[in-house]
Length: 59
Length: 513
Image (cartoon, rainbow over all chains, first blue to last red; front, side, top):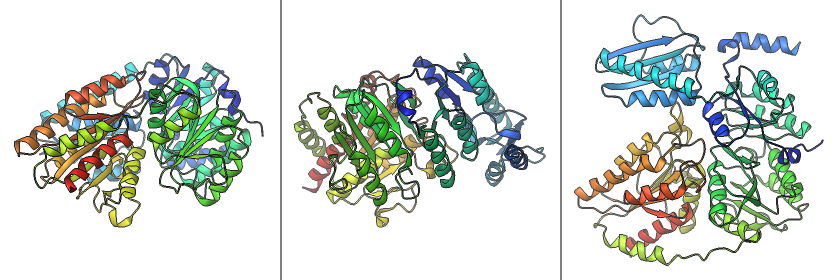
C-alpha cells in the first residue's frame, strides 16, 4: 500500500464539497479551490429505485 | 390555531439549511410550531405525528420539501412561508457558486486537481458517495453522522487499501495544509501535527496552540468510533504514520476518549516507530495508558496544548492563576444564601466531557446527559438538577434541530430556564467559533447573559457567568472581539474551558467554605 497521505500534505489542497454548502463557502473564503456538488438523493430518494440502481451497478 | 401545509415539489436543500429555515420561521410572531423537511418516509412520520399535515394536503415524496406550520392564523403562516422562501432563495443565490457540479464525477471534470472530498450528505447515502470518492483516488472527510458501523469499517478498509484518508464518519473538524475543514479554526502553521477522535477538542487544542505561540502542521480527525474495538483504530494508525513521515511535523499530539485496550496496543506499536515527541490526551484514561512508550500524558486539552507547544520548542508564557482565587472570592462574596449549584451549558461535546471529567476527578457529583457514571445520567436531558453539565450538541437535542454551534437559540432558552432557579450559583458556557460555526456566537449569547443576570438581580441574586472562547484571532469571528462582547455582557472570560472549570470550582469551594 502506498501512503498517499504524505503526498496530500505536499500538494495544493483542492476540494469537492458534496452536501452542505456552508462548507463550500468556507473553503472559498480560505482561497482553497473547491467545486460544490449540488447533491440530491439518487433516484429522487426512492428506496426501491436506489436498490435497483445499485444492483445494476454491481452487474 | 390554524394548520398550514405547503409542498414544494422537486426541490432539494440540505438538512442544515432546512433546519435553519425551520428554526427561523418558528421564532416568527404568531407561529406556534413549524417544520421544514424533505418528504422522506421518516420525515413523513415525524411531521404527521406533530399534527402539521393540514386536511386535503396532496401526496409528497422524498424529493419534495414539505412545510408544516401551526399558527395563530393563516396570515402568520403566509408570512412565515414568504420568509422561508426568501431565506432559501438567498441561500441559492449566495452559495458563492463559482463552480458547481451535479455529481462528484462532474466536479472532477471541472477540476481534475481535486484531491479531497468533503462529504456531508444524509448518513444513509454516505457510503455510496464515499465509495465514489475513494475509487476516484480522493481523500475523504466524512462529516455525516448516522452512518452504520459496518459501513464505516468497510469504507476505512477500502481507504487503507488505497492509502487514502477516510476521516469520519461524524468527523466535524480537521485542518489540512492550513485549510480549516468543517467546524475548524484558522491557526498559525507550524510543527505540531495532531490526530483526534474528538471534534471540539481538536478545535480547543489547535486554538490553544495558536494562542500559546505554537503552530499546526496538520490536524486530522478519525471520527469518534475509530478507537473502539470494532473499528480498531484503522484511521488513527494511518494518520499517525503519515504524521510520523511528515517532515513538517516535529511533535505529534493525540486526542480521544480512552481507546479500547486492543487499540491501545496497536497504537503503542506505532508510537514505538515514531522518532518524534508524542503527547497523548485520552480524556478520562489513567496516566499510564501508554506506559512503555515515549508518549507524554496530558489530562485535558489545555495541558495537551501546553505540552505540545513546549515540546515543539516554543517557550510557554507564565501561567497566572492568582486571579482565579481573587475572582472567585469576589464573586462568591456577592452570592445570596442558598445559591450553590453550577449549570454548564455546552455546544461543544468534548468541552462538556472535559468539564464532566474535571468534576469527577474533584469528587463533585455533576449530572449530565453524557455522564459516564450511570447514577449521574440526567433522566430527562431537558431538565437540570443540582450541578448539571449539558452537551447540547448531543443527539437528543440535535434530532431535527440545527447544531448549537450553528444556531444558539435552544441554548439561550435553556439558559433562561436554568438561571431562573434560585439555587443556581454559576453559569458556565463555551463559545465556539471558526469556519462552519455561527457568525457571531458571542453576539448571540450576550443578550441572554445580560437578561439572565438581570433576572437574577431582580430576585436579589448575583449570577456569575463564566465563559471561554474556542476561536483564534484569525477566525472570521476574531477571538478578541468575541471575548470583549462576552465581557461587555458581564461574563468572566477565561483562556480556555479547563481554566473556566477551575474558576467555577474555586467559586463552589468558597460556597462550601
